[in-house]
Length: 426
Ligand SMILES: *Cc1c(COP(=O)(O)O)cnc(C)c1O
Image 1 (spheres, rainbow, N blue to C red):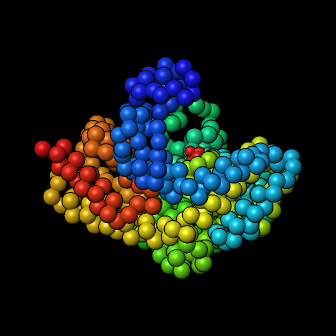
Image 2 (cartoon, rainbow, N blue to C red; image 1 turned 180 degrees about the vertical axis):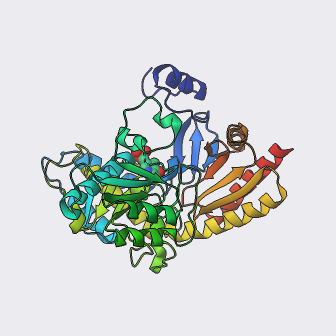
Image 3 (spheres, rainbow, N blue to C red; image 1 turned 135 degrees about the vertical axis):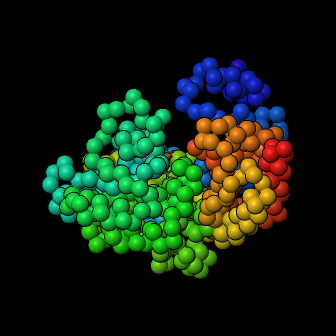
């Protein structure tokens, strides 16, 4: 077997099963090609991608502008480490900080690494600027959060499967209910040793929970009043997914809905990943202003691959695509249509309880218990009918197609979804 040998789907799955760790339970489909909103399996069957690699492929599969930037840079200079400068990183940092409205950016690779980075920055700031006594800085997090899979991050998760038998856990986190301002207020008032509040603007993995109108802005203000940093994890919600450049832009409608302008909520620390590269390459980042980011000095934090020239070139291209193709506006518009059509469908279908979301980050709630296989079975039928989605938390199906979708394609997909569920309900 060589890398160029074509495998059947069955063969590919068998190889993973035998030689790969079983840390995922994928829907049984083997993808071998992607372009725009479509992917094709090993046998050549075409599908609409309604997961977009957990919102990493917002710009569509194999976007030519991003692929060109990547291949050009790969042939020129791929990695120097940060032991030396490279001539792409500064360009990217200038571009991204101006776009998102922060003084500085710290480049990493995966979302979890960027979250870890934000936590480290917040704690260092708490000791050196805020003046919290050594080793006492707590960070407030929300129940049902998802911030990644490292030991510290699972320490404050309440997903039993993600946590069990990985202890001892990292201390210093206080968990409160999501979308509960009173809980936040009480916790902020209960201690002088709080460094930061870490929050997802919409809880994606938990099942696309959109907080109440005004929650984020009020939470930000409470944090500011207590000199506590507001950390927005926009790894999944950022980069136009929710119909704004950032979900924390709220209802801000800057020209093109694609600038930092005066967002509804300006995070003190912003965490980005996933679609920052359009899914071409692992690129994540933490952004903050000087008063916070300057606590980090040489040797405090780093990554061999973080800020490499390919990542820098890819991220610039990926962000340019979002602006050039007005993807935030498109996500906003198509999201309204999607929820309108699906809500209408819910009224007459007993299997789908409700639809919720923002922009093109949406989910339907299946009217069955969390441990039922109904959502999974529906996803299998959707697959057979040419659309790929995956259940999250048992009875919730997330729908998050690439943002380059046209209205015509979306309407075709809505028909696939509603026909499949109607067929299934019989
Ligand atoms: C996916 C995700 C992460 C983790 O990103 P990885 O690249 O998988 O490490 C962190 N936070 C949120 C909100 C995410 O959706």
